[in-house]
Image (cartoon, rainbow, N blue to C red; front, side):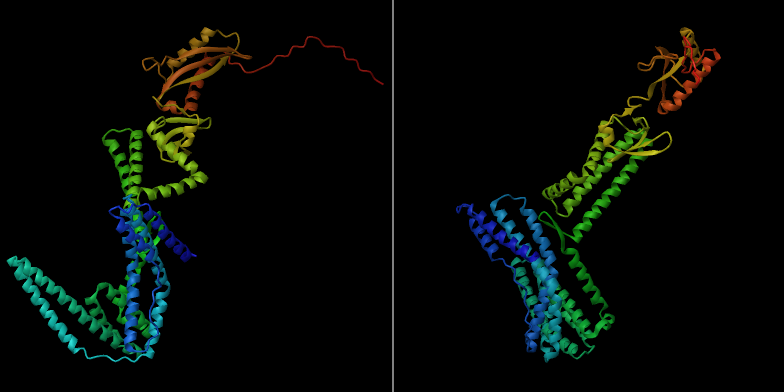
Length: 563
């Protein structure tokens, strides 16, 4: 199914490229380049890697072995090719020309083919390797005398040293013509050395094949020559050959070869790890994300989280030195903390190569989730931001949400607010409750609050005497209240006659308090009620309770008739 999707994608790339080409005028300066690109896109096809397994002699076996090495090398290099091609795509996305759009289609198709080849090799490479190994027993191997090539290599190496000495001479004399000539001769010498190393590698492989065929443990020493010769030819070739050499020796000697080839086994394992971490795990938009990208992304986020925590702790420490209020310090700490987290997230996206368009794709997908179940989380998040900046509720305020929910605000985060009640119980309340519902903030502007303390006396009591008794008792008491009206619009304590009720004459004492007494309304009201009760008792003023009098005007005669 996955292959069918890839084939369909390849067809779409070619068709889209041709449609874009039709819209480009032939007089355009890049038209010939565009035509070539479209032709290339049409020519790009996935071709299954092949290897000759119909082997009859030593020469064919050596050729097939090199085919296997090339396939292994390609498998090793494909993750890097995919990544580098993806980088080219990212650069081209910044260009909105039609030529750039065709180039993007070309690289997209190239990446698709690379991925298909990688998947094919990942599935079949081991089978090809095992099949080639099984052919060893059918082939007769005869090695050549390599003394000629060894001597020739020594001569070329001496010649190389002489050329380097000669190059240094001309560099000192600053003769550009001679420098260029000697550098050219050095390149030729290096190429000749590589050809000699190829000959030596061929012979070492033939000796090694024969030793494997006969299960001769000398093969574990011969592979050192294979390693040395291949390393002098090409680093990637050396890695691929060593991987196959280790597998062939495992097939022949089993786990015994680990004693002899621990270093090569470690290199082989490391190369496998490199292939895994460089291969795309998933895609975001048009960007392939590898394990390395994902780890870097997480590392940047975690690093940003640590920086944010350090910033918060630093702000709380500085508030004592700079005499900053706790609520202001919390506001600065939270704003800075979430700003650092947001910046870390965007930086992480940039480092792994994701642009804002990719972020928009993620945001679009996220919006679907928000619509189905995350709306409350987002609502609380936005409400938290509003609370932090609006500051109608801040750290240290005494608030009341309903009759049973009141307390001091001790923390405001992005999702919730923590209130500590007078019972020392912490309530975690979603932020949207403060935005959507009516909330009483007892200490918004200041911590001065007026209490209304109701009380009643019996009918027949002297109203003026009642007021005088209560106000005198209040003035002589040690109760916390504001006595003078020199703060804002605060008036001295006073009593208001409210109503003549069914059982009593009802009054209210209006008194202003501040500080901690404003934060415990029940306890403060209780203290004033005690004072009123004692004052009325001492003045022999009756405190009524509800009662009903029943008046019977007439008792009618009741006659009882007996049978």
